[in-house]
Length: 314
Image 1: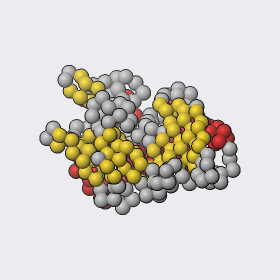
Image 2 (image 1 turned 135 degrees about the vertical axis):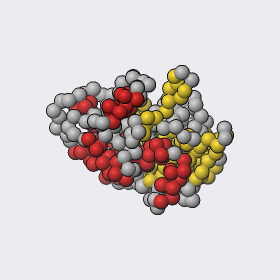
Image 3 (image 1 turned 45 degrees about the horizontal axis):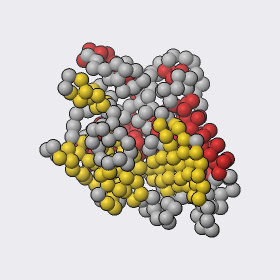
Image 4 (image 1 turned 45 degrees about the vertical axis):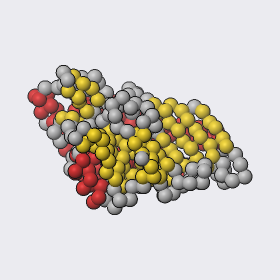
């Protein structure tokens, strides 16, 4: 983990970076007037991310989630109970299109915690008959990947709020930002161009979004980084838990701005499940959301933005 500090008579920004959830994270914040010392802040962020890993990670075999999924009798902590409650709400809002209890479907297609792929229709039907929120029980296999990174950003942001930080950008794979950047302007976030092979964020930019200073989550979901090809066909990592199959439509990526990163994460995934037209209608029906959709139009890339999505450059 690294820590950098930039001090002046005005704002005092620090940046904390490190490893989390199989990747890197970065937290930038203005600690002017904050009593906690930078090293203490760094230690607290590290502790939060460790708690999340040991609670919600399906890749950490000793986490509460992994042990529960393996059939162990575990005591669920408040964090696990909270994210499961949120997940039930998303299931209801999306009509079952966002279902954390559909873990076996992701495993069957090789996008969960196993490497299976191309399951038979009989296997899909068998899985659908026993998994999902509608069958939720103590033996259900859960997978929080659709919201875990957004949730992590929100938990870190909540801690920073508690110590008096108001200017922040928390990037843990998904983003929460609030207030102003070191230049005294609202934060800007680059939106990646959803082309196959664009695996490094910021490498190929489609546009730049700018906030207005209000706290919000900004999350992009797409099928251009996680997929595989077999027998000449591309299989997306976005599975529709209602059908049991990977989605097949022309929506390439969905960027959602919401009041928190958990919602933004969940609804960006939801948009990728339902496709372009339904995603537009959903975003426009929600005054608490803004969205930016990139899609294939007769072989060319096209974009759609909701009225309040502040795209400052393309």
